[in-house]
Length: 114
Image 1: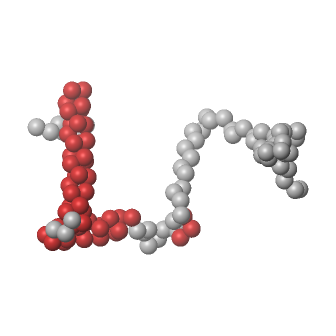
Image 2: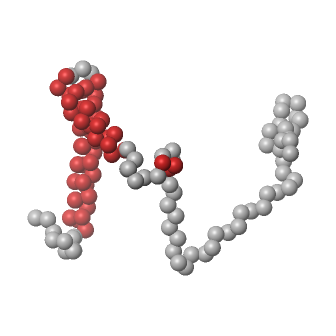
Image 3: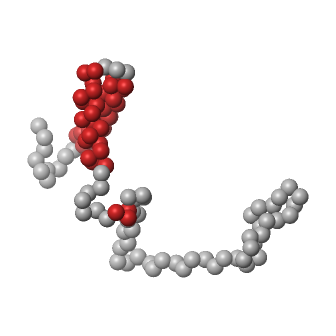
């Protein structure tokens, strides 16, 4: 019997439920892979389910209508800062007399033009 909302769950029951959730997720992923593999091998009865999987995936991955267009190339990094966090440190100053990064076979360093 499933515990009621807010009811304390024994640790062993929590672990068991976590294992069941993991197994269910793993089995669902394997099922989708098998559907697509069967379709790729030419089983005509797998074409319909395979197309539904692809359609559903395309709908889930598509940007929402109210989503901004500029963020499609990469995900946004979220920054979580608490109220009592220290302010960010200033960037370190670049050293002026650093060694060259590239040296050719004759030992001549490559220096970028300023």
